[in-house]
Length: 388
Image: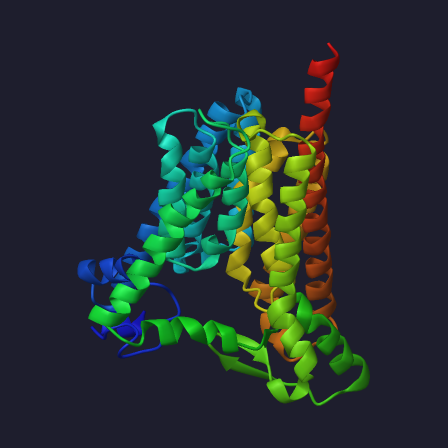
């Protein structure tokens, strides 16, 4: 924010880790107010607008896609609002609430039955040009398009190219064009995500934290790329390599298994419940959060609207409430209360981080299980129609 406020150019004059569409979101408040306090307030108001947009999209998803009752909508929206207590300042001082709105928008528009379905890819492209994460969603939407019925055939593998044409190619064109025409440091800055170490809050840091507390190993942390990472000398090279690639490998396995399930269970995308589409998207987010070496506290903002959707559809709503309260409550303790003790390997706060990450991993596994079950229910419904 300081570089933006002082009129410096991102990528060329200071390190900037996000693609170019994030720049208007960050520079716009500087047009409203130059002093730091004024700029900060303007940026917070901007993020408040995106928070309101996420709230509205959640309401429309509950009403239009799930046909939720008035009371269910009210409680789900209250849950979404209460989850904001777990990261009160991060909502308005990071870009992640923008990503939440775009993720939910992608699920909402993809499950539309008219031309607005194509706005899904507008959301994904915009999200990829703000943060890179939506690029990892493209195989999911390729599978969903592959199994969408059209006038010619079902399934139709040619339709799997739609996310590539609508998102991947425009994304590459913008990045290359900006790098050539505006600042040739853009791609270099984005590629620095690949050299980041193991962030202190990630699952990959847990064995190193335990080893430090129990055995006093010479492990320390360093502040780089806007976060605290465990210093490379304390991390075995093979372990660091696994932390960088294992998550992507598991995501690839998930997509291969998902494609196989779609084919074996005669899944036709239009017949999937909108909740199932949201669940599959949510599963990708949780896989990346649980398995990547970088896990920032603001990433949990991505989960809020999907946790509210889970609550709305759940048979046992108490389980969703308890799970959400545990994960997001512990996240508040980990970051807002105990972050500095944790980066110094405090023996009392570090177990809180471990508990939070364990619950997050279990939550991810349960969400994936529910997605698999929903796909198998599609097969049972088709077989029942054949028998009848």
